[in-house]
Image 1 (cartoon, one colour):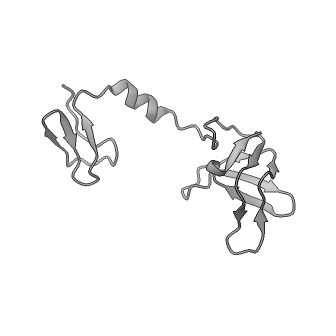
Image 2 (tube, one colour):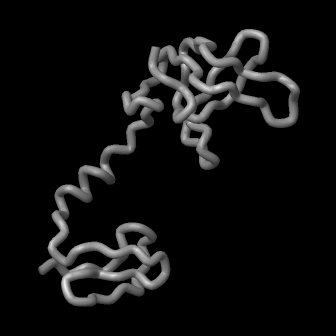
Image 3 (cartoon, rainbow, N blue to C red):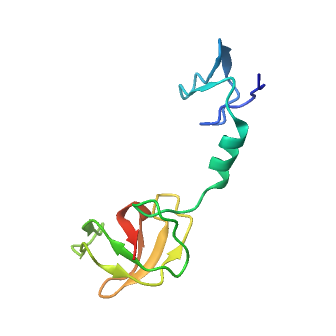
Length: 118
């Protein structure tokens, strides 16, 4: 039996054991007492930014937009099929993790879930 001290979902220290489960009262996450720690560490280490198909992205890749995207505060639209070259991966706290330049629009940030690797 593994002695847990924090919730893997929200890192809360207010957890309790109920039979073969650990339960976090703050986020309602439940996990097994016999959970494989190596599986959890591989998920934590794999923070690669992935496209809509699950392919890992890297700086300098080219991507294609798979959904029509409206630009907030503007009447401009990024159309489906727009190819974006030379992307840069950034740590966007709001989910926008790709920085790029699109012809006719300029510098823009995109979410990786709306692009696929070209």
